[in-house]
Image 1: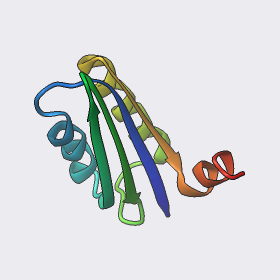
Image 2 (image 1 turned 180 degrees about the horizontal axis):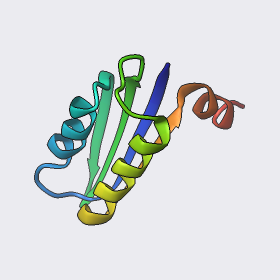
Image 3 (image 1 turned 90 degrees about the vertical axis):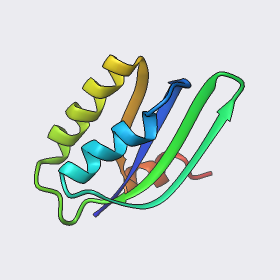
Image 4 (image 1 turned 30 degrees about the vertical axis):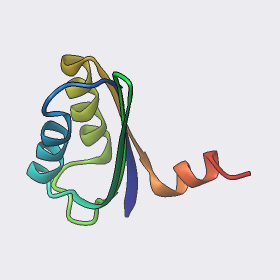
Length: 89
């Protein structure tokens, strides 16, 4: 199963490293990544593979949300099919 991870917030050192660390520790593979800094605002979208994940989807979502709160960011994970359905015209 694939999912989309989005990260939005004020830019700071180590955002990619800290999000990637959570994913790696839980056997989530990053398939593609795009990140942009608009003035002081950081945005990132990752396509990830959850097929070898060691925890439940809700646990991963909780871990990313908690990390976002500690970093002052919004970090969300959505299943790929839901993300596509929400953004389809």
